[in-house]
Length: 222
Image (tube, rainbow, N blue to C red; front, side, top):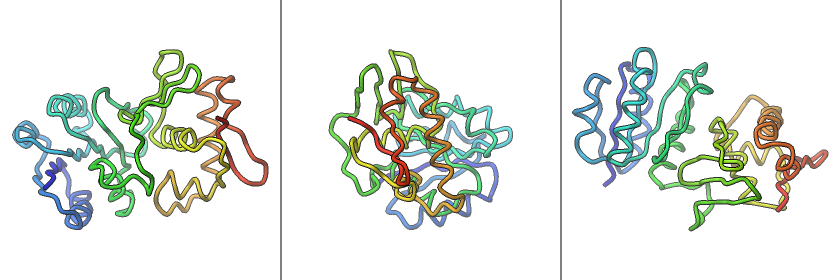
């Protein structure tokens, strides 16, 4: 049975994640951030950490402990902080915004426990190399010409998904389903915004591979 440690100083997310975790065959330990060292002493498979308020400053400490164990990490952050957090080296990490739906949180947890891969088998090789760009599927990191590129989670997920399915056109609705992975009510315009940001970050030459198919959606050229 897999073991999860839930660390939060408030009750809002605790109640919601209780519903998520009771649907899984897992053993859960929970407590406040002040109890972090004790909670993380025994081995575990996943840490869920609420990085809100004063606890946000303890995120580097949690990341270091997860890397030492090692175990996966799911971080709950405020929406205004999501672009400020980075994916730490050496551990499988994901982020979810405070107030996210139960279905989204469940999907993130299952992914980090390797129980769900969005209906797709995970490639045996965790590295996708395209010209000077490398996408690391194990650490959620991208480098271009050896330099790390700062992506948000959804920017990374969209790029990685398209790169794993080259020469296939996906509609915006399909990308919302496959990448966002939950019911998104904000409209397909968000896909265009994320594509524009990805192109700007990977540079003009690689950006040419991410093609707009007029009236349909997007594809990644092999």
